[in-house]
Length: 461
Image: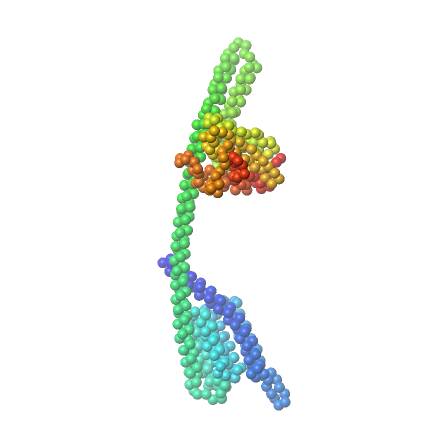
């Protein structure tokens, strides 16, 4: 049912477009015929004589004014009422009137009647048999009336047979039979094209709906996978930080017991008490910093505003989440503070996520190597600032460099990675108008976070 309705719409659109194009064709053709009619009239009967005086023949004036009126009428129809049914019928009438005028100014010569056959062929471009019937009726009526009342105009003879108009009409009908058959075949062809296109549109819409549904499903799966990966990372970090948090808790417990002993004396050492309280406060701050970093990483950060943030703050908050893990695995983590004035206008949570992902990948890669180290450095020039994460590995093999930033590509063993970390990191950098890339010139494995100046990127206060 949907296909049939759409096929009818397409069929109507095709016919209307064809009709509009044919309207424009006749608007231009009329101008050419008008000029041709004037030329014919001028050379066939250029002057009329009244004694010794001559003047332009009335046929020339008729060609100029009547032909001009027909041309203007056709042009107006094509311009203001294109593709209308009434337009094509009126243009058919106008075209036959132009044929009548050409036959008249030529003196009814038999060869000028061929203009009628050519006109019918052009009118067949409308693919509408009714237009041909309208034109044929005009022709038959004209030949009959002029044959009776003005035979010199129609046939170039003073007297003609009563049935002469039927002879000419028969030839017109003969041509109409073939032209009408051609119009019907053309309509059938357009109908078949419309049906095929409607079927293709329906198939395409179904495919698009399936693609949209599948894309939504994949996106949901990606979100679930990403969330699972993040939760696994959070769990691993939480387990890794248990010892780091446990130490400060032990310090707080021991210091508080000592403080209690000091304060229980008859003459408590106030200065020592203050020192112990300060130590407890600093240790609590250290625990709070760890918890805040973990809480920050747990957020997506995608909807956060761009905020100017010191680079050192971003990196230090990230290192809180992985320092203990590096120590436990015997990997040396090198980091020297960047200039304090170096800042990024960014979503700091997302940049922290990128750096943490790069550090985790580097840790997994070098923990089995004899030489185990990971280094965070920076470089800058007039166009950008680059944060670089380098490890002691021998670099990314050339055959996987182009794939490594693609979703779901991983070189880790099954169950240890989803292959989404780097692709998500690349997306975050793209959103920051920056770039995540591999340094192919470095002898070790190095990833570069390139922040361009004067975009979202780097600012040096």
